[in-house]
Amino acid sequence: MKPETKFYAKVKSQIKNISWIRIENLSVPGTPDLLGYTNFGHFFTLELKYTKTNKVTFSPHQIAFHVKHPQNTFILVQDARDMIPKLYEGSRIRELAACGLELDACCLGLEACGLKLAALGSYRRDSLFP
Image (cartoon, rainbow, N blue to C red; front, side, top):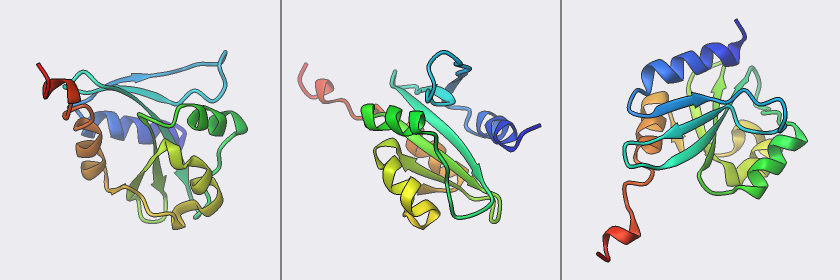
């Protein structure tokens, strides 16, 4: 089993308060690996990456996807050296490609990352104005 496949199984089994849909898309290159749906009715995408170094590699299509869709897109990187998942916003994909894991993540650890993702959509502007 590939490391990213094992990583997906870990994400799915440990972040249970999000409905996960694995996207297997050969017709649109660069499409992220997962579509997530929170209890607040909020959709987002998640690209999974596994690395053994500080470098995080992306295809030009993956970069283009995140540049075109900078909101509600995330990248979760599993570092094989310390096994601590790191979450990045998709809007920072160019920085992540250039700086690798030197770039500060918005969350560290699978539990914290899961809590951040599960909270997406919890604050809705329209709920302030009935």
